[in-house]
Image (cartoon, rainbow over all chains, first blue to last red; front, top):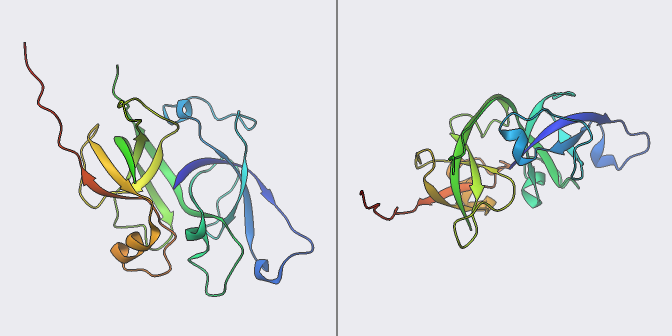
Length: 99
Length: 91
């Protein structure tokens, strides 16, 4: 699971039937500096990705998302999803050792 | 498996039903020399590792699904072991 910052939503018109009713978010993975409190900029370096969401996260939230085949595990039917929002994060306590 | 160091925890109230009850920690992956490598990842921590302890993380979802007893859990990363720390000599 990685942490990411929700920067937008995706709305579909034509879609695979497996996606009916699905919500998708655009998520920018957090850079290391942002764990320590650096500001969240919507266009930070690093590529954003589209994440399936059924928790109701919105722009500005921090989410924990899972990638890979595990992302499709929660579905009853086989669903072509490879990133899944598993948690909306309320609080991050991050204290790396000072070197 | 990933060698990592515990650098923090997260708190989440809205999550997949398999996540509450698990402690979720922020893990900094380490390279073979013990230096930070890449951005931190999250893992569930059934062992109760302490801050800055070094751990082994499994990225195998099937073991994690077994642990949380939910065959439909999307969780993947789980702490499997805490490393022995070398004794530090005090001057």
